[in-house]
Amino acid sequence: MKITKICCIGAGYVGGPTMAIIAQKCPQIQVTVVDLNEERIAAWNDADVNNIPIYEPGLSEIVKEARGRNLFFSTAVDQAIDEAEMIFISVNTPTKTYGKGKGMAADLKYIELCARQIARVSKSNKIVVEKSTLPVRTAEAIKSILDNTGNGVKFQILSNPEFLAEGTAVQDLLHPDRILIGGDTTAEGQKAIQALVDVYANWVAVDKILTTNVWSSELSKLTANAFLAQRISSINAMSELCEKTGADVNEVARAIGMDSRIGPKFLKASVGFGGSCFQKDILNLVYIAKSYGLQEVADYWEQVIIMNDHQKRRFSDTIVKTLYNTVSDKKIAFLGWAFKKDTNDTRESAAIYVADDLINENAKIAVYDPKVSRKKVLADLDYLQTRTADENAKSILSFENPYEACSNAHAVAILTEWDEFVAYDWQKIYDAMQKPAFVFDGRNILDKAVLEKIGFVYQAIGS
Ligand code: NAD
Ligand code: UGA
Image (cartoon, rainbow, N blue to C red; front, side, top):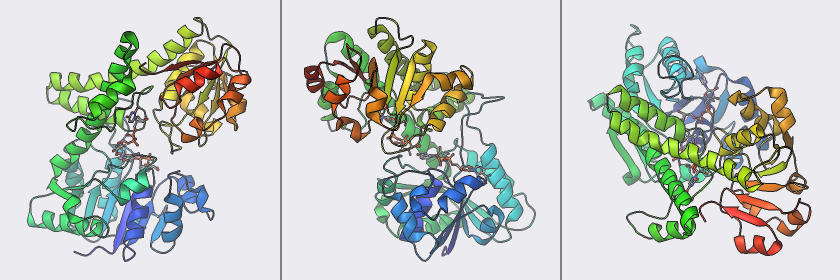
């Protein structure tokens, strides 16, 4: 089956970039990305391509090339579903905030709504691709909705999880380590798999395209995120031990990373991992394990989250303790609010939790992030519901200029590893700060020797 029209439901951090690359690499396929969020779609269609809603290095150039040619953004969901032979579901799957599984299970209401909408609208056979990260066996529920329309339309369901990381989405999509496609073992299922393999084969070597059964594919995505997050919690656990023993976590990471069985990546100690997925996916995994009665499996993975929460709390505790046990009315400058560099995404960013702790201690937080607005910072804090929006607004000072954010501050805390922070004139920052001037480097990006020579009291993670 040759695909000529693709529809993607969900124009977010995954749907937008993924479809932009498919459109760029497959000019023969018409790709329409749809979303209920009119504001988001309007931003994707903004005449100035720099205003697209997601910041990713290299993305605006690709959108510029393909948009209007074979890449379209629209709110006409029904029409796009009806016309397409292949439909990607790339909607959000957040942690449930209500009912059974609250705080753990993935909320699948958006997925189910998509399935019902596809079932209602489709007049011809379709391949439905799960792009969102889903609990293992979700395809079963989608299938049950799609197979019971009674209108004779046939659906094949594939699982094709996405492994891109934000900040490097374009490079990850152009040069993926692997593409994973899970499908039915029947002849029809295999044909559907082949149709999707053919799409990716436009730019990905076929030996990097793995095909499996649906359940392996769904579970591999949760497993990959659990393993990645586990590495961070493991090195962060060691960072605390390093601080007590005189070992240096950067040296330890280097030493173990040279063991080819361990490898050097994802061993950077930090203030704690953030992002929309690691925590949500591990909690989901824990929930699934518990629902099968596998308590030890659940406890094992839950520890990754417990360690991460501890690491964030430890960072704010260290700031308070070092600043003579009080930060009341002190100005603490936050360099960075995004959960990692090169993205404007702040979901589950460690900065939110560290700020929340420090505001509880009456600190004033002066935030500078090159890509995050004051509105977003306040929305992130309000979402926690620790205090009123008014109180949050009074505790957060926002700056467009990092030097102003740091001016007169008692301490600077690095929350995101933006490259530009390293290049700042740290002497100038020191001169304008309260003394003693403290730097808490939650990302271990600055040079301790240089900062101490200037006069800073410098504290990193894990040394
Ligand atoms: P997102 O919140 O940025 O985007 C989801 C979009 O779906 C939103 O714009 C929302 O309005 C839209 N939507 C929801 N229900 C809809 C419906 N019924 N019809 C039309 N539009 C609808 O989310 P995201 O970060 O793109 O994540 C999407 C999925 O991909 C999640 O399951 C996530 O776990 C997974 N994932 C995310 C990343 C990442 O880096 N963000 C990476 C890999 C996988
Ligand atoms: C992560 C995975 O890397 C992707 O493969 C996956 O597709 C995605 O989740 C997802 O499913 O959403 P992402 O969260 O975008 O991608 O970014 P990462 O680079 O994994 O970073 C996550 C967090 O861990 C960030 O806060 C980062 O600063 C932190 N981190 C990462 C560390 O603290 N140390 C490290 O060594 C690496």
